[in-house]
Amino acid sequence: MAEEVRAEMVANVWKIVAAEGDEVEDGDTLVILESMKMEIPVLAEVSGQVSRLAVAEGDVVQEGDLIAVIG
Image 1: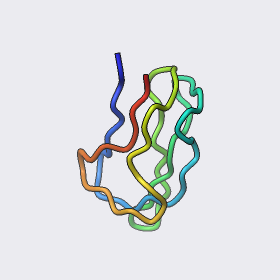
Image 2 (image 1 turned 180 degrees about the vertical axis):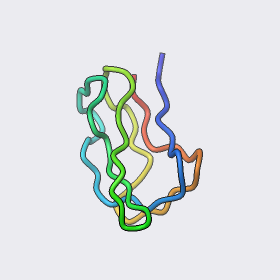
Image 3 (image 1 turned 90 degrees about the vertical axis):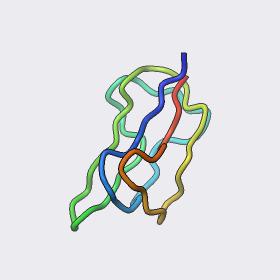
Image 4 (image 1 turned 135 degrees about the horizontal axis):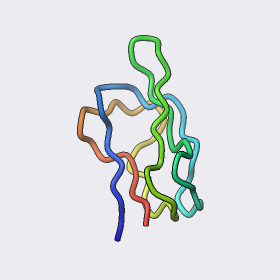
């Protein structure tokens, strides 16, 4: 079953670390968000393949927005 990774806060997408098709492990960094000059890594909570990356560098995400799908 696919696991959705969602934003936990309003932030800017500072850097994309994983790409669609990449195999990731639980705890791997998918993207790095920036909020109030702090860098916040968004981590995979399951191991699997990134089947969808829903953000691009420079995007602004709101709390609850989809960032990636693993599975």
